[in-house]
Image 1: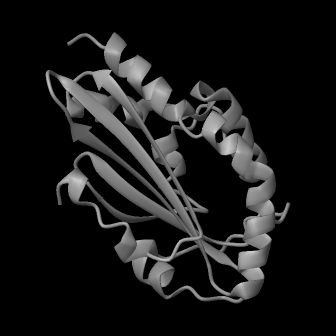
Image 2 (image 1 turned 90 degrees about the vertical axis):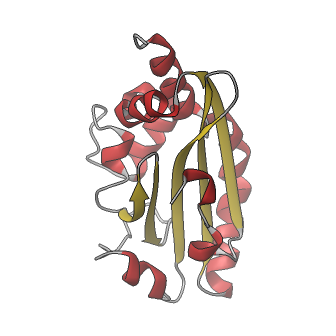
Length: 182
C-alpha cells in the first residue's frame, strides 16, 4: 500500500478529534523514514514529558517507533514508509486505563462503554526536487455519548497545546534526516 493511499477512515471514520502535522526535509523518503524511526522520546522535550507522564515507565531513550509498537499501543497495519498504531481505553483518567490489545481485529471491534479508540498514523510522501514530507495524523473516536462528553472536556484543556507539541517529533526527524550523510 503506498503511503499516500492510507485510508484512515477505514480505521476511524467518525473521529471526534483529528490532528495532522507534516514537515518537509531535503531528503529521500527512505532517509526521512529511517530518521523518523530513530527519534527518541527525549528528542521531543515537551511531547516526551507528556508521553512519560501518561505512560509511566517509558524511558526517554525509547524511540517513538518502539513506543507505538508496544503496550498500550498495538500495530494495526504497517509497510515500507508507513505505520498505523492504535490504543483503546479511558484516556482522560490519571491511571493507566488501557487494555492490552491483541491486534487489529480487537481494535476494530472495541466498543466498551465510556472509552475511546485512538489511532496514530505516520508516513512519508515524496515531493519535488529531493524533498520528502513526514506526516503524522492522530484520530480519537468515542464509543458512546458519555465518552464523547469526557473527550470534549479533555480536548478543551489539552487541545490548545496540541499545535505546539504535535509536530515536535517530526521536527526532530527532519533535523536528523537533513544531518545524515547523503
